Length: 325
Ligand code: 1OR
Image 1 (cartoon, rainbow, N blue to C red):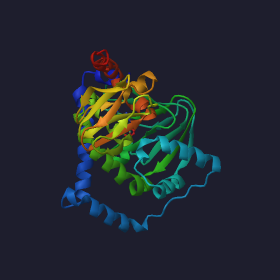
Image 2: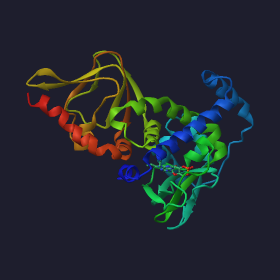
Image 3: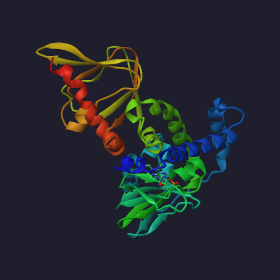
Image 4: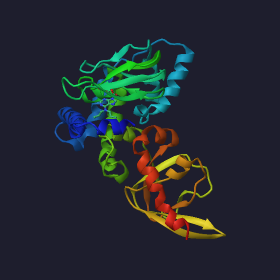
């Protein structure tokens, strides 16, 4: 598993520092761009957005079929989840289809980066040299629907890893200009917004910070009032939740009586059983106050929660003592 490979390396803390370092750099860049304080960011960003009036949206000619595939892949690529329809349309226009043969280098670590890629077909390997002179480590395999190459654009740094086509592959590329004008602010804001919350979630605390940022990209938010049912026992389940604000309880209805079986507070998660076991929801989850949850759909859950899969499975036992009563 990815995380094991990464964490088993001897310089685990320097890896974390690397990503944190990138994020610090980003904050510096933003601070410079948004003087005098971070609290004035939104007003300034919108101001800048208007000034960016000169931005000429790029239009790359492509077939109806290519547009259809881009739309489908973009709906899976978390980086774009914060965009509205108008912004999505601009990004789709700017995207370009790029074909690679197995063995081709798509990105080389250390190079300057000016595009981001979304995988349409095939698989690509990601390698990284952590310390000069040491052999590169294989970090992961990119699959259709995933995106890569965002770090150089988000944080204005050289490519942090090498990406090489494992099979023949088709990717859609997005240029820096369009990324900067349309995607960057929304994506960076979302990462910033959830970065601290996710770093405190017990389940994710040993996860690589880079992987946690991708969870931030994929999160959606929903609010509930006291006594609302967030999950209903017996229903089909497609979502996995973290509590960002408030308290919840789990209840089970047996022979017509509803009994409380578990309670949750900020930072806890629920909804994992149905996704792991492919079974209907085993309990109700009821809000005990005003509740804000952030959630992942089942596809994102499978792609992003993999590294903590073992912890989730181990923790599944937490319900047993209640359920048997
Ligand atoms: P980029 O623009 O730097 C290389 O070009 C891309 O590889 C990078 O953006 C990411 O999209 C992707 N560390 C750095 N880059 C990674 C990593 C990674 N994984 C994928 N990329 N780590 C992965 C941990 C699972 C190591 C973090 C310490």
